[in-house]
Length: 451
Ligand code: NAD
Image (cartoon, rainbow, N blue to C red; front, side, top):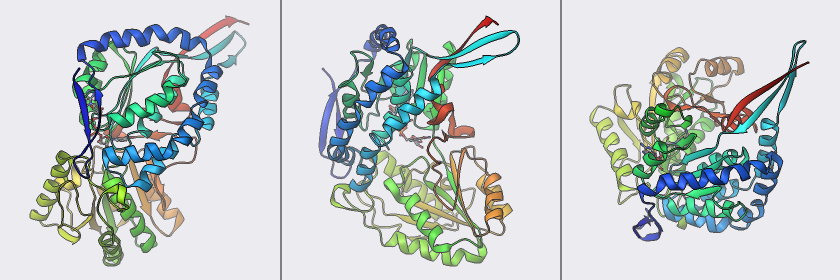
């Protein structure tokens, strides 16, 4: 049997291997998932929720094991991996209760008719996930898909198959057979799932793959949730708390080595405070340690050589076109890229337009808040955006002009519990989390009777 090997990006060592799923086996795998679906649906919304809650203690006891695997497979520093591993169980019971609330039947009546709105399972969901949050991204899709009564054919990223398998193994300790089936492989296996008889594709990954999936899914009008890439802007107004803004910019540009869909990739700072902001940001970047994430470094390796080459090519091209390195920029080796602050970045540079997905903070000076908004919105992406400013009304007014799906004001973009994770424009199609997000994994049906 052919195997898929997984490598540690910090040292090139083999972390492990999984059996590669032959593409020709995928239709039969989908058939198995379809056969298992009616009995799974028959357990009922509450029954499925209670069963899935049984995974909570398993996730809790495996936090360290999962965190070590995340760091070994994709390089994230241990403290970030622990956060991701903990998030799998944290709040799971609350989320499952929220799903039960969102999908319970609703009753609507007028003088002529009494209707019940049902949120029924769709059938089989094909879930395809990326490597940058190799356990939490699967969790975001699999929990709502399964709780809604669907069965799932799940393909983790080929970069992090062991994390995907370990996550699914926990669920499969409580799920009936074939309710969740893991497929291993790369694009070919992903494409075969999209082509197959699944009812829905839940995808998180790059915009290009998302567009391909949308085209392919159109032939049978499969339901879609697409969470795609971003080029998130940050606006720093002239009355912002500069230290706070610089700290946020550093954390959000360099966390997970910049390999986060809502990383701060473009910073627009007002001229009056630009010197001070750039100095503060550069100071934080220069103090960061780079190395094996398992050994306490602040910034780990990039996931692979392809991603590293992409980042370094964008950096070189930006410098050749006139951008200046204010921190970092040298000392890159193997898969390690030094956190770099680039100033004087202009809109015509590739680093200002295409997703970088690496540890680079790009700073552009602007003359006014209006110019900042115009340039921040000058993108086909629209995942997150943040604004830092002093005057509350002015900062809020700037936030409301941004075209992203999630906007943070003097804080990260993550919303209060129960709010959706949503991309605008070419960053996505559909929601994660929240009532609206949970309902996407269902078929709405209305049954109406006479009064
Ligand atoms: P990717 O698109 O290369 O791959 C993602 C997954 O899709 C992998 O499992 C891959 O094997 C599979 N795949 C690739 N092409 C496919 C196709 N044509 N049909 C079906 N499956 C296919 O992305 P990646 O490099 O793994 O992840 C990084 C990307 O994910 C970045 O663009 C990042 O912004 C995005 N991302 C978005 C979110 C979000 O919430 N919006 C979250 C995390 C990551």
